[in-house]
Image (cartoon, rainbow, N blue to C red; front, side, top):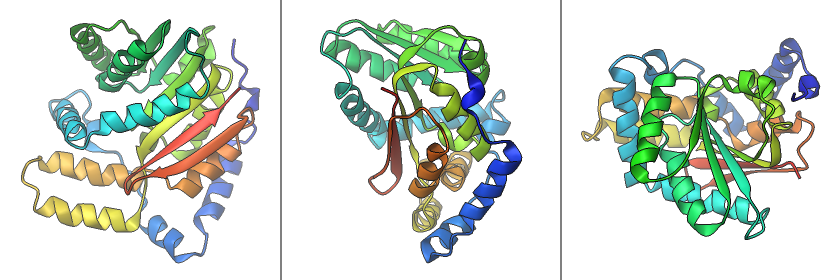
Length: 269
């Protein structure tokens, strides 16, 4: 069973240090702190009503238009390629898989590039898991799904995975939960953890807000959630600090990717 003893900070101590970090005096940090919010998005509050799934359907279409899935595959493939031999069997677990579009894309792409790939998706919402199963089946890829909480799965599971990925999920986690999550993934992972998400940037949020006023293609719910996602997300410095508290990572790189995204690449071995 995975050992959770590597979570060395209590929530009180963590929060004290987090608040201290947020007090950084540079202008950029002050502006980014100004727009930070941990309020829930509509899709979180209404995940089991009609509004939540509609927002996720719009997000999928936006991801296609922005070539987000191509971005994920490009950076993940580079991360995997550097740690995998061509004919070495491997496994990838996506945490927070939602409707399964990302892990399905990964299974199709990496399954064709490497032999012996096994692919898995995990989400706390069983309705999403059913959608993800149907999505994988229609795409002709074999993926095993789990409907459970990530920390419970890490605590109870005897399985290990070569790579664990999060796509547009980290910003849904409050700082202490994300800290616990990154710590819990160490004993569950053979090779590394890969995170891709939006990053919080004051000027990007302002630009997106102004652009949304003239964007009539998407619903007001989707545009509201898009802004809130950016406000809940992390900066490069915050993620670097947060993962530095977690023992077990051999090497970590948190990098900006274009104007909007960032990746965290944590190497276990």
